Length: 217
Image (cartoon, rainbow, N blue to C red; front, side):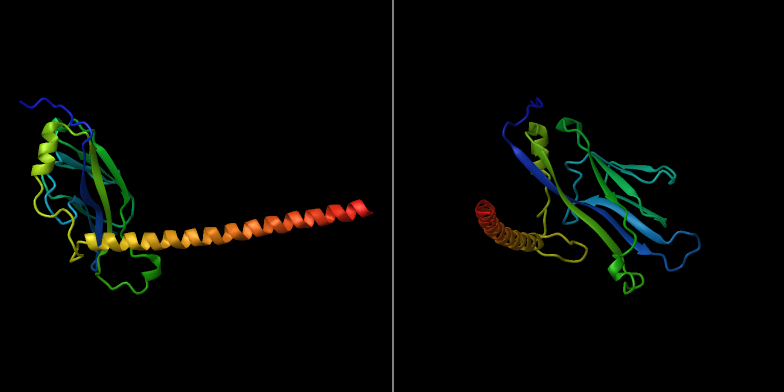
């Protein structure tokens, strides 16, 4: 019989992708300039409803029914508009999990980066995707069973393809870039540290010389 007992020392994580995709409306019959979709899903596009009970998207207060809730996938909202604003994505877990809801925040992005705004092709979507991992520490026995048995296929794709911008390959490349950046920063730090030490030695020498001159006067 399931008791809701938590598994001590057990930590399990589940990757998700959330954010929005936006496309400029080429034919504008209103003041709306873009069509956009805000979403939450698995990084490989897979179903994540086996460990998510409900997803709520809180839109700008000017939208009719600005809180949209979904108990089944796809977890997404499609609208049109002209302005960018913060969206709150609230994730609820099954009651047997004993987990509190988690809120994610991101700005709805409609326009390409300013540096590319002049050359951005007409009709090309603007992707604003975020990768995250939901970490469950000491889950209940029931929830652990759901987390481990519900997964369908690889959770993170090996390579980038189509709309899947996160992959094990890109993750490894990002780790290498971070390692190179850390090495560069460490090298600069050691360089400036050596310069600072040399400057301190020179300053101490100058102070001694000044003291000797003052004493001789």
